[in-house]
Length: 392
Image (cartoon, rainbow, N blue to C red; front, top):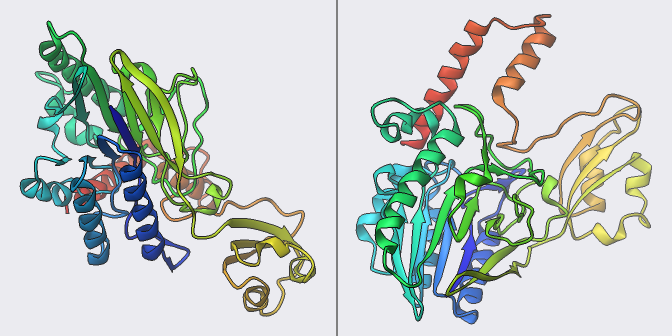
């Protein structure tokens, strides 16, 4: 059986004010073409279909068209991510066909999508994004679970393995696949980017790879760079990464979808199918004169550009002049040489909001140690706002 693993479409997202819907449509059309040409048996979309809980109608239409076209010739399994509204995305589940499956509910974690090939069943367990505070009571039984992503995902996988054991007893060959949306880390340091919304508010963010022991293939979503967190070269646990670059921190990333071939005993091979990008991306730094020199950076005149101007004084008409040199300039910043480096995160950057607050209090109020009770109140409010958004 051949699977196409993708995630983090983030439909409706913008890049420094630039509408990306046309680029997203081209990327999804390429994914449909790849799925057809590669004769995949199922497409797995591991969360963050949309960029926000209430997506623009054009994004909803693009999603509906794409999964409808995919379902005309293959199976499609979609799970919700931390950017999605599980309620809104899950509402479509009632209209699904026997080839299109959308999973957003905690009570269906141990209910697999049942596929099959010449060797027997392939069971796909689509685990939605699990907010620790929201689900730790549901998954904990008599006692609430620890308030962490590792705890709730471990409990979810315990349910998956229990169901798997009952379905595979006496079966000669059965393969298991889990879809999950989380920050999973192993021996290889995770490659993060500025466009990933931090999920540390609500508990410990990192989930160890051994949570997925016993599963033939784990199709992860959340991190936007394709990577293998276990680092064993086998590729049984993988992030497919996003199909488009959503921040300048991803400028060097090659975007792709993951093709997984399952044999009678599990994963046979894993390969990457590139997804063409609308433009190259470049972060350019130098003096105003250097950046405006017509002979410099000539290979980036058609790229999306972030410019860092290092002059001591901010040049007049800096953005407009640079935009004349680089027609697709999206953002320009004045960062004088010798001054402390500044961080320029994109929207939804992977920065813990509580760390940002603590640094602000330290700088603005000269507090070395902010009051823990005050921080706890802020954390509770942040979590409440995120859960409200996710349920919108």
